[in-house]
Image (cartoon, rainbow, N blue to C red):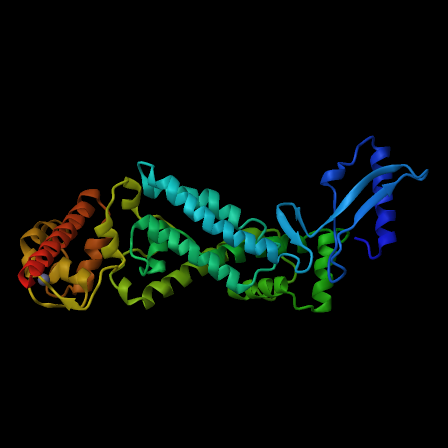
Length: 383
Ligand SMILES: [Zn+2]
């Protein structure tokens, strides 16, 4: 980096000298000068001359330069890159939907594309970049949308539930893990290494950069604060803490969401079995996530419905004949007087045998169809 025009010219002269010495050639059109901070907006061309005055080449000035995959801008260094990543995320979500729609197993294709293609690309270089909270939240929202689309639930369905079904982790957690692993790596470097020197300098100066704040928050959230010289097992330790954090966050989100009162899964990390079978089981998913409209009057039995999942699985007398075989098979032991409705629903929704899942789905389909027919005949009556 140069501070003045003459300094830059002399640096470029040295660069050319080095290149000639190594018998290499400078690629002039691809070499750019990026001015940082305030200054004139005129774009200059830099002529690089040989000592005898012969023109070696010209370098153009630019406002944005891509370095190791990160776009650096002139006035606010990385805001251009961050905006670009957001637009890219939206584009990737659209592309995944388009590709998965034509695939035989929509869910699996979209799940793999998001986890193995889109997410790593979006999170590229997040360990080094200073990340504002709003940016992380926006990416998180896109991930939640993607999860709901894959599961075929309503846009209002609980995102904690959707993450549980797919075994996905949060964007925030992933970024914290990456940042801390990288932080430890630099602190463990040799004293002579530049990254370590720069990092120690910012710590000494106590400068409150966004990146430092990111690290500080991550250390606090993952319970690693106060560690100034990370040991050999640092990365392993961080990953373990991150998994614990992710699990605790998820469990708290599940327990605070009324819709997930019968949610049967206890851990986030494993994908729900029925998703890997490749069936479209929208009813089963919706019931597990409590993603059905509540607070209405049943069109079949005229009872008031406070929880539709419970009404379909337990209460509605009209569905009794269809329900009996399901309960006979799966609740034989637990179906005594002390079993609460929530226990029953948890048992039914937690059972992950294909024939069982299918029969819950069938019950839902029967319900939905009867409801629709009741709607139709209701509409005819009013006509
Ligand atoms: Zn009913």
